[in-house]
Length: 333
Image 1 (spheres, one colour):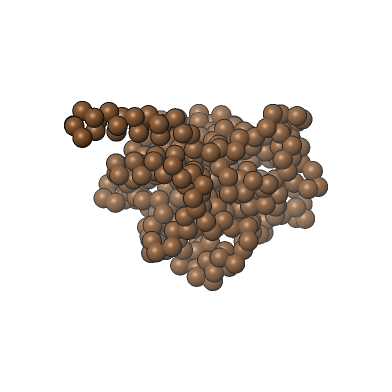
Image 2 (tube, rainbow, N blue to C red):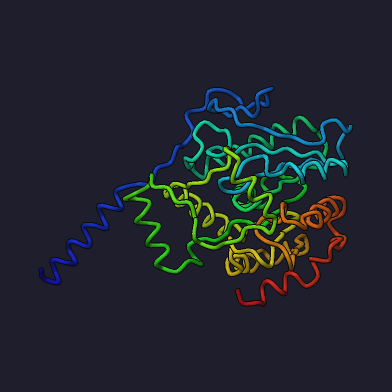
């Protein structure tokens, strides 16, 4: 086979693969106005997403938090932090994002627009339920990425954002072979599932909690390749939108995070608008892992969140914000 023929065949293969799009289960057409019902969050296209809330029996809240879970997780991730915040007069809501938890098409990637549109609709509903009460958005990992894409320039007009290890590991920080493998895999085997076993990654030091997640049928254990592709698209978008964040923001990151590397986190912080730095507080937890909200020492993180909501200008109770920005930006990954 000649060199010219080889190049022609390679080009044809690339074109053929490029014509194959990864699977996205986008929502159907809008058929009614989104609603909060006894069954959950009814979206515009008619899907009902499970909703959990904490603090509803403790009188009028001084603040409200909408919490978004991470990839392959669901709304129950906020059960313990939500109960803690309720004891501090803060009511919390979390819903199963489309494609996760108890949603009808769990395991299938719904697309960035669907995730963002659902969040915007849920914000409107919760704001209507609690008029005049300060509203905060909290996102863990993928949930943080959804919030960053949905709220550039403080578009949702909330009291502040709380981003716990936001998923910003976009292609800009991936080696070429990872990008190529993902591109090919999403086109020739989009439905193949991966478990991540053997990677020797520790998401948290709370082993009992991790074992419980392994037994929970609503936590996705085997991930479709096209869902991973969709997640990376979301992380690309979140990293790009870092330059457009404006409102008060609390960013939480664990020194021992093995899921979202330090390098993309550093790039996100470097892209943050200089004018918005006075409204930004960064916390770096020396013994923290990726799942900061559920680590063995997560209570320190909960107290920091409650304290920041109470007064965003005060130092954090844990001291994790001392020189945190300089340590993250100036340190090699």
